[in-house]
Image 1: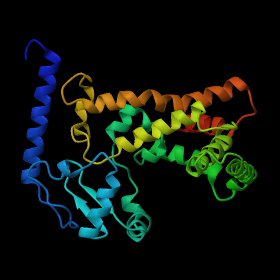
Image 2: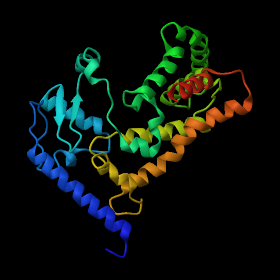
Image 3: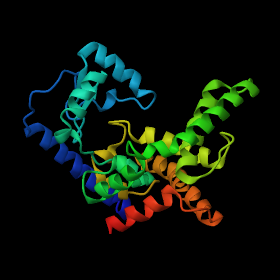
Image 4: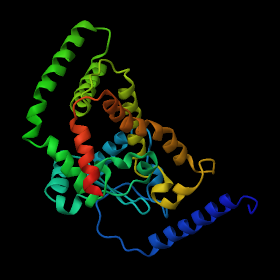
Length: 279
């Protein structure tokens, strides 16, 4: 072990962190919590978490335990809301106490943390929200109606002319084309467009990184510093696989707009303002 100092340090810190987790869980007092699946000693419900269509398991739990389900995960106790009403009651009516976001280390490793949807409440989040609201408030969105109508008409023509293409694929193209036209001023004609492919792969990575209980690094953030070849560092290999797509999704359309020298788009103005307000 001493012949590999990095491995030795990683193993030692992991062992100490796991010991701290055991001691912390052993002496902490748990408040009254909603029902949920039975947790194992020390690791809680970690083994119950699935990376494949986890929402199916969540739905089954809500049928068994009710509309609010508690999962005992180390350092990250999780609540599942199984109905729209439960979401409204907690996330909207009580937004003053439930509006913050937890840290998601996998998103940091993938560089998904640029999105204000995942930022914790603070100056950077407020600047991003202000820039977004400027272009997507109730009065501002009327200016995009012509784009929505045009893209809808294109969608209907595709449905008639491209019968061999599935409706689901055409609907996804409608959504992507509308977003890219509004944000970047770019026309998308096919789902095989490089920008769309970057976005779709990035979204897959986002979904994979969000699964509660799937990655040890969420409980022990210092593990983000271990190399990808280290045993148990599969999370790093996953993050490294998706990171180029997330970076490409963010930068490629922006760079294309600059090169084309089109009139300033909402995205360019908003990004400049957001950067200025956060410095």
